[in-house]
Length: 400
Figure (cartoon, rainbow, N blue to C red):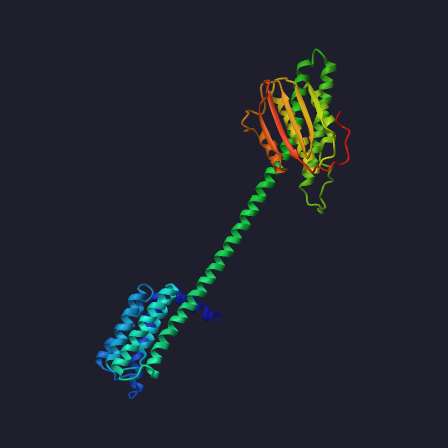
C-alpha cells in the first residue's frame, strides 16, 4: 500500500511524464491488437493507421493543458479511422481519455453538450462508413463508451469539488476557532489590565499624595507627617491585599498553589473608599436618590470600580479639587455621577486615558452607558448608567 501511494504521488508530481506513458501504452495497444487479431473489426494495420494512431495518441501527452483541442484531435482521428473501415479499435480508448479529461475540468453543462457532439459524430461516422444500422452493437458501443468516459470524469470532478469544499470548510472552522481563541485571550488580557489598573491606581495615588504631605511637613509638623506615613502604610497594605485577591482569581481553582480569594469589592466598601480619599485631603460630597438595594455582583463591582477610578482621577489630576458623588437608584438602573470643580482628569475629555477607557469598558460590559467630559459648572464630570433587574432585593444601609 505504501509503495502504491508513493508511486501515485510520484506520478502526480510529474503529470507530463504520466500522460506520456498513457499515450505510449495506448499507441502500443493500437498497434498490437490488429496484429494479434487480424480478422477482428479493428481493421488492417497499415501505414495510414500507424500514422493516424501516432497523431491521436501523441495528442494525449498534452491533454491536461489543451483538453478540448486534444478531444477534437482524438474525435477527428477516430472518425478518420472509422472512415477507413475499422470499427473496434484501441484508438477509441484515446477518445475516451480525452472525453474524461474534458469532463474533469468543465462544468456539467459543458460536459453534456461536448459528449453529445462527440457521440453523434462517432455514431454518424460508424453508420455512414461501417454499413451498419444505428442500433447495432458497434454503434451502441461507441456511444456508451463516450458516455461512460464523460460520466467517470464528471463523478471524479464532483468528488474532488466535494473534498475541496470539505477541506475549505475545515480550514474556515479552524481559522474561526483560532480567531475566537485570540479574541478571548485579548478580552482576558484587557480584563486583567483593567482590574490591575483599578486596584493599584487608587492606592498608589493616595500613597503619592500622602508621601508629598509627609515630605512637606516632616520638619515642621512631625505629628502630621507620622499621620501621613500611617496612611501610606494602610494604603500599601490595602493595595497588596487587593493585588493578592486579583492574582488569586487568575489561579486555577484546584491548583495546589491556588490562593484564597476574598469577595470582590462592591458598594458595601464605598464608605471606606470615600474615607480613604478624604484622608488624603479630597473632599467628597455624597448624594443618594431612591432606595438603596442589593445589586447583582457584576453591576455592584462595576459601580464600585467606576466610582473608585473617577475619584482617583479627581485626586490625581484636578489640583486639590472637591468632588460630588450622585448615586441614583431608578427603576431597573443605577445612575452614577462624579463631578469635580478642578481642571479636569485623566488627560482629556475624549477618553484617551486608560482610566476613562477602563470605566467605559466596564460600563459597556454590563449593558450600561458611559460618558465623560466637562461638567456643567466647570471641572470634569463622569456619568454612567448601569441596568439591573427591576425586582428589588434586600436593601443595603451603607449609603446615608
